[in-house]
Amino acid sequence: MKTISRRHLLRATGAAIGLPFLEAMAPAETPSRMMIVYAPSGKYMPNWTPATTGVQFELPRTLKPLTRHRDQILVLSGLADNNGNGLGDGNGDHARAASSYLTGVHPRKTEGADIHCGISMDQIAANHLASVSRVPSLEITCEDSRQLGSCDSYSCVYQSISWKSATQPMPPEMDPRVVFERLFGDTQLTPAQRQTRRSVLDLTLNETQRLSKDLGAEDRRKLDEYATSIREVEQRIERAQPAPAGAQAPAGIPPSYREHCRLLFDLSLLAFASNSTRVITFMLAREGGLQTYPEAGVPEAHHSCTHHRGDPETIEKVAKINEFHVEQFAYFLDKLKATREGDRTLLDNTVALYGAAIGDPNVHDHNNIPTLIAGAKSKIRPGRHVKYAKNTPVSNLHLAMLDMAGVPLDHLGDSTGKLNLISDL
Image 1 (cartoon, one colour):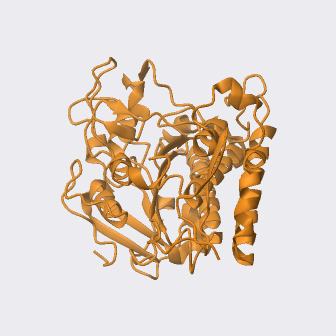
Image 2 (cartoon, rainbow, N blue to C red):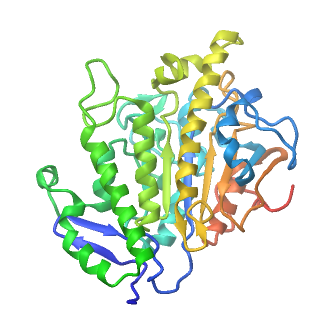
């Protein structure tokens, strides 16, 4: 049987497709991936925080969609994003939340061009791992992220959670077509050529057939399943029709939030499975945004609901949105767990963080933020709820995640040391 490289690409004019893990690949260390899923505008914390710590904890309402993954998640309480607080700058908690979350840096308050924050942990990882993947990192969102004007009394560029440098945010992409092209397209094609080209699978058919002849039966099956997954995602993108008048989603993006979110999660899965990238940030919506969730029974904008002032009916709307977001994350974990990589799964080889830089949104609390991680078999001890000392910097967790990805770093933003994700403290 022919041995092939883990970085082998199926190339053709207009396409470049990475391969999934195959038995025919030369022995190599299994790659570690990093996924950050950001949930905007905080949570209704009584529905998020387990009542007890340790292994005997029960999943509260918001975490119920993760029941089938209970033994593979680690819920962390007591973490803080102190730089999301005003610290003398007054209003702007949502802008500060987004920009400080992965940087650990308090952003300069400005609505002009003199922005300043810090490099984010995902970009530190992307820089370190750039030589081992085709795309250093992906930045994705399910809600349009404005980059011009003023947002929450700060420049709108502060809505990005990913920062390449102190002055260079990485705006997230919400169009599945653009994400697909970045993963599998020929970067030399013009936008017009991309619109008229055939399926990437049709373009690479001859090379795929040649490769299949050198593979064993099990690898041919895996390659066929992988191609089917790509085709299915392509077709879902093609079926996305222009949004009806008044809808938030622009043309080419599914008007259904659930379909849009899951399509982007499926693209994230393909990105990891093909080793196209090892680092992804995924914003479920933007901070303080106008996203509505009629599929969850909440037609009102999320942000307006979070300032519930203790009203039970409004709190229930927030609870439904919180649970709906976690449901989409559970869908992604399902996909990771179902994807085999040798004797492990893609979930085993991925550290997936789900969190936010705001805890109780009614008071813009940054001192007890919702945080859980999943996956990373052998690198964490999951199936637990761990409570850390009050105001432990979330940057300590990010340092630990970088360590899991093989990225050596001693300090990040306001970090005071790496979290030990094996012990109970």
